[in-house]
Image (cartoon, rainbow, N blue to C red):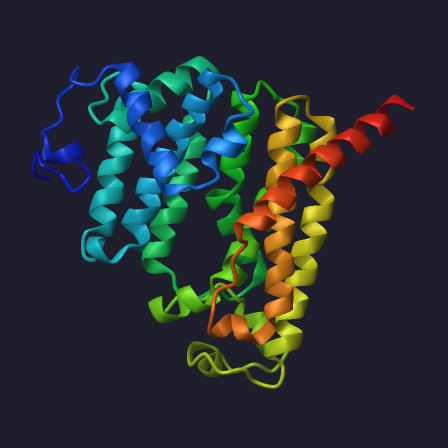
Length: 307
């Protein structure tokens, strides 16, 4: 690849040592704050080192996700993801040049973050470049295992929570969040010729894939979507103990994530077959209600633990 790759900062060539750790963290934090509107609210609950580490992780995943999905990278996706993985290996060796990886390398060392979690994320982004359909729900779950669950495990590690029981609950929540996003984004993914509804489920409810891709509701579409929502909700419930079992600020973070995901899933359930044509979204008022509910859930959970 050329020296001036599409991810360079302000089109300035990147050289080892050109970015300090402090400047790299500022770059990642600015990227996270600019792309994710709730970043300052949710992550403001954490210490500065925790916020910076999470911003580096977010920046890594945000760029990789864009490489896999966004139109400007058509024809370059796999090459860019390969180069992104090369930067990951270089940052592990302390030879990073991109600000994202200067920050990420420092965060990995400080928090003992396994490289495999980031390699799993990249494998999922690569899969999005080539796989457009899923035959079974197990295939979808395997994708979630690599696209979503590593993020939860990284957050746990940064918060100093390394209990395998907590990790299992986190996996449930992260998988549920990914599934919720799939159902919420049906109208976005269909024009991209991508569908995460498993073929076995379409067949079970008698919904022709051609009708789905044409964004037309068949007689069994409402039942199909209700089925997907119900099993996604079960995963949320299976992961719910993480909220009260983790200490501050993890309890508030996971509570916000859990309640926010459940709120979006509620919108998905209410939308039904209209999901094929439009994407429901959680507005600011819903975000505020979610944060208030987090405090209530945590308070009630604390009372239950002390009885």
